[in-house]
Length: 160
Image (cartoon, rainbow, N blue to C red; front, side, top):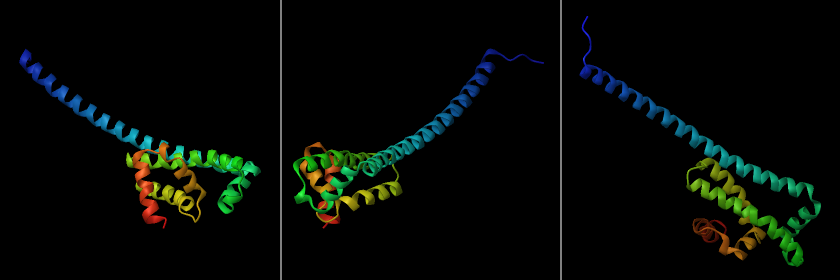
């Protein structure tokens, strides 16, 4: 039996190293795919948690619920304090829409989920005499440019 020489061992180690690199790249690819899926799930879960918190607040605070209904039906009869409370409730709601828009544009929320969330927000934003739309326009300076551009298309296309 013949012993392997230095160059033969080097060839064997080079092949083994190549195999290890390929296996490592496959593993990294799988990890990235799993991480991407986790990020998408996290973005979706965060959005649902925020909506749930808002719903819980409205369900458990009768005065806040009254203010929201007043904003939806008789905005001109609201006191300054009532409008201020509504605005403080609605700003995070709008910010959540902006967050979901951003997550969708980055691929962290898929198209089907985006359409569901967007329809939900559009039902508030595009309703006749929408108080959400009023809050949005009273605070134009706080929205990101991509979200503001998206909402501008709503004002001219979807909501009229």
